[in-house]
Amino acid sequence: MGLSRKMMLDGETVVLSVRTHVKALFLPFIWLVVVAALTGFLAATAGGPGDGWDDGWVRRGIVIAGFALIVWLSVLPFLRWLAWTYTITDKRLIEQRGLLTRSGRVIALNRITDVAYEKNLNDRIFGCGTLIIHDASEQSGLELDDVPGVASVHRTLSQLIFDSRNAPADESI
Image (cartoon, rainbow, N blue to C red; front, side, top):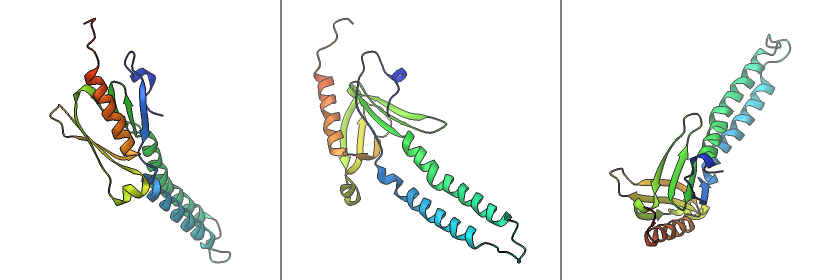
């Protein structure tokens, strides 16, 4: 999980790596159950002997359509969730996402100017929230949605930012 070794800088260590909260998979799970049940019911009741439908093509079509819907509504969202990570190292904050085309955003800790978090009622029930990070660039703030244990991640990130600003300057430069 998290950042591959080839993306890390020299001497950099991963402090924290998380995925979005598992609550993002609730709707895909519901779709999985509904489509599987509906596919099973329709395949079992479709056609019967003597009515011209007994060659099995209708059942095969229903099962193939059900399988395609399950892949589209449940498997792909799960794979997207699996590929979406937030990684905090001792030098950077990295958001990565995407299955075939990877994208993300990297912010050096010493460029972060503000870190805040929001938790609505739903987030408080599930123990997650949105982490909002502003940096010294012209881009809008980075919002990391559904971060599990957002208050703990906020504290960790704030401490790392504080430590990076108060660290002694490197004398080799």
